[in-house]
Length: 145
Image (tube, rainbow, N blue to C red; front, side, top):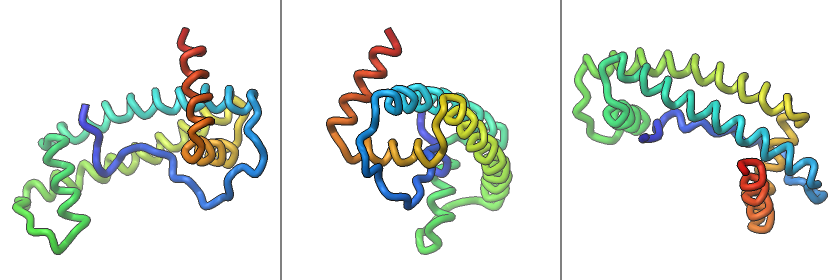
């Protein structure tokens, strides 16, 4: 499935500093559980977003093209007035969905015993640390078996 350009659902990472201490096994286990729950929510949301876009009469590819053109006014565009209206309508609905999704993801993260700040810090640490990435992948394999 094509990812939606404007709504690739990723938690916005704050400017908080990286974990100064090591991530414990317990924290990593909680993060792995939360991350998988967030990914499931994200996958379901992408399907719903595709339905919204198509319900407005656009394909996700055309929605993304129009969105890119709207973000870059100097880019030449062949968007019709009807498509602009369809895009704006879909975009408004997607923004509401995105807010709801953010709230749902926060709940999933808190359910496993992590704060949003801790989740984001662990996420940042894992992104920058290949050893932690391997540990996380091992957790995923263990949880899925």
